[in-house]
Amino acid sequence: MALHYLDTSALVKLYVREPGTEQMVRLASPSSGHTLAVLALARVEFRAAVRQRERKGDVPHEAAEALLARMEQHLQNLYLVQLVTESVIEEAAALLDRHALKAYDAVQLAGCLCLRGKLDDLPSFVCSDRQLLRAAEQEGLAVWNPVAGAEAP
Image (cartoon, rainbow, N blue to C red; front, side, top):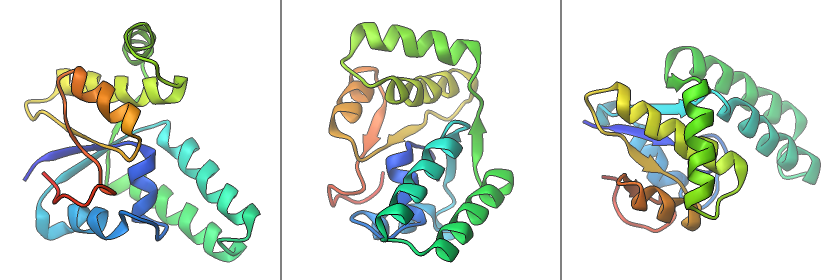
């Protein structure tokens, strides 16, 4: 049993079949006993990812609506949600000075780092973006890429 902080690139794999989906489903299985944490901002990023797939024709409208509704429900009762606080924003700004990250990536990583400071469990950072994973490792986090094929930590 462990705490896993899911970047949106990993979170989407729980809802839309793509490389890494099977690994994420195993990680999120209730029998694993893991706690899954997400940043409140993941709600926006997830919606953007689903709507983009819908616009491309990869996901039918009805399926997109169902995915969004399921995600909203899970945000209420499945995930530990890290709020975007002033501390998260400050940490994200500092991360941008230390790493070549996109703004939302810095906010995601900052959310995990701030969560680490609030809980007894040290979260692992779960993500499919190699550059973001490198930054997380350099910040002292255990990391896992569900696309890389290794078993979940």
